Image (tube, rainbow, N blue to C red; front, side, top):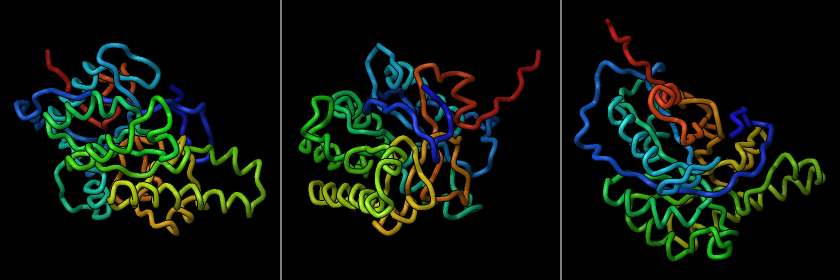
Amino acid sequence: MNRQRMRSGSIDRRTVVFAGLAASLGAIAPIRALAARVPGAIPILAYHRFDPAIAGPTTITVRTFETQLSQLAETGYRVTGLRDAAAALRRPGAGAPSQAVITVDDGHRSVYTVLFPLIRKHRVPVTLFIYPSAISNADYAMTWDQLREIAASGLVEVQSHTYWHPNFNAERRRRSPTDYRAFVDDQLQRSKAVIEARLRNRVDMLAWPFGIVDAELEAAARKAGYTVALAYEGGPAAPGADLLALPRIPVSDADRGARFDRLIGVTRPAVRP
């Protein structure tokens, strides 16, 4: 996966969501000698799809994901919802426990078939970003009934990924300025309105498609009623970060052990001979 910063660039369109989690997190004692490099920084992990055993460019195996959850617990992180994490980032120096966030983009059916049973078992919160045009329409996507079921659990918060996941850079190039602004407003407002009507939940958080975000898009998101929006790339989110362009950490199947530690901002003490 291309790991470039995408505030204003674009990448090839990614496929949708995934799932899988387990591990007896309550049985793992935090290792107090491990510490995040930036005090108060919160790793916001970005996933798309899971598979029980077969990895892919945007697919993580259940075994790897379980290992990642175990490492989060070992290093003293508590998995929280994005809303709680954003509240902590608004209060630099508030002394909140170390938090990590699991986000999943797109609404792939594996969220329901694989991820949901596991998060019910282990009580791990997830923030799911969907683009409503695919729901109950695309063969890879979840249905509205499935989304209602997982949202009712209280463990999954369903939020916006725009209406049909456009590449805003491409749309800006091919549209007039007035048409582009109207297009952006429609993508942000229609997604929010449809999700709220279908699921009866508040929608005020957004994942920018392809991580594309700039000042004009932030202003449109603010006007549409979003208070938190996520970019793609950038490491852990530090206190005081721009809440409409919070960085995320894309996670691959290779991200385990020391490599995953580096992603979440953890330094392990040197082992003495």
